[in-house]
Image (cartoon, rainbow, N blue to C red; front, side, top):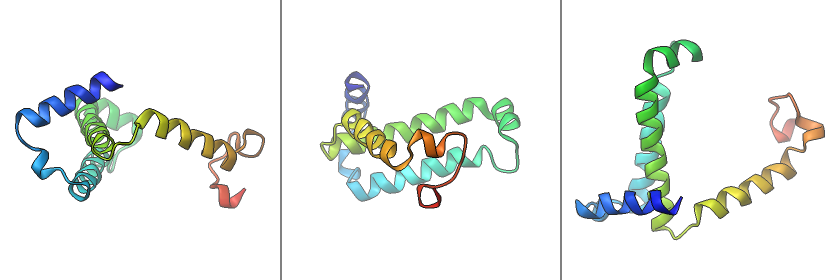
Amino acid sequence: MEHIIKKIIKFRDARDWKQFHNSKDLAISLSLEASELLENFQWKSSEAALLENREEIKDELADVMIYALMMAHDLDINIESAIFDKLKKNEVKYPVEKFKGTSKKYTEG
């Protein structure tokens, strides 16, 4: 993961864009890119969206990940640790024996 983050930061810094990348604006950009990803699925089944928009979906998903990794870097958050920590929390919220095969939220379990 670290080599990807270094590449992203090198790209950004070569263009002197860090000045525009405060936490608020990165969060906004992350949300906007997630919305652009979602737009590829609007009014289509998942299967149709993937058939018609696979390249756009790939690009938007990459944009989401780039902004998320850049934000984690700038906030000095080890994203791998953050993901593992969140998975541990989710294991407690969603025990297999209670939630396997269901889409219920933990508050509904």
